[in-house]
Length: 162
Image (cartoon, rainbow, N blue to C red; front, side, top):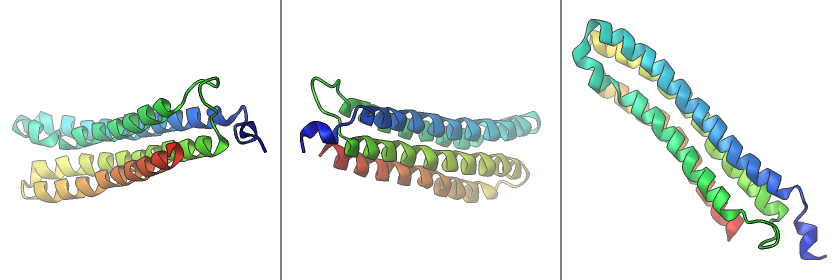
């Protein structure tokens, strides 16, 4: 078998799909977390304007989810070269697709978790200030879901380009 047998014409499509899925799903999760938490913050701000700055933690954590997706997308795109320079194998395409899905879908789940917890947490914080530490801990556990996806995506990316 020749090297071209392992590099079908559609293999780069899988890598590009990995880039797209990482950004699409990761940013949907980040946007949902930001929007849902923002609704809670707006509700808190009408009653207790002094709590707004501390209540922004869920929004910041949601934004980090999008950064995870961006990092993986840039790494995948950096490994892709036009056909004359490099034969992009089916294995690399599948690995890059797995990278994108890994970080994207975990980012979607993490963004959803952060949004729900952030909304309820900042509303509860308005009522009882002692809930703040518990809210932050729960938000961290939600964020870690996205971090796990990033770690798996980075491992898969090194396997694809190694």
